[in-house]
Length: 127
Image 1 (cartoon, rainbow, N blue to C red):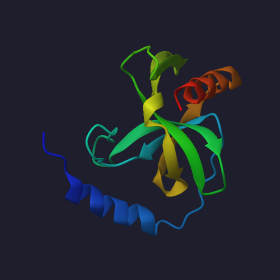
Image 2: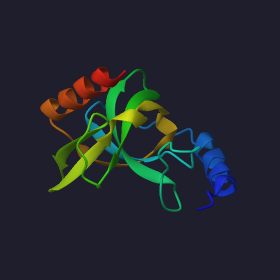
Image 3: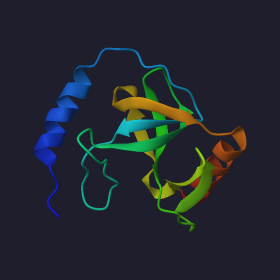
């Protein structure tokens, strides 16, 4: 499957021009424009190259540590499933990374403090 790096690059340029302050907090799940990435790094989907991301640590008003999510249920050293919006979400723990708030698109909701702490603990164990 060919990846559409050129289209993502144009989308990324537009996201970078965004000067609107986006207010976000730890425990929130947002649709996030994570883009088209190299090799086995998780890609976004659709025309906005987006995927749900759980905010696990806020460093500033513009930067956070997030973990991409999938609806494919998995449980392993690198995956952690939890309930969200009457369904099951799986955190892709090996894909945790730093994001800029300019990538945030739409807030989906918030997880409990217990779920956030479980995800954080699982991330700590693999790094």
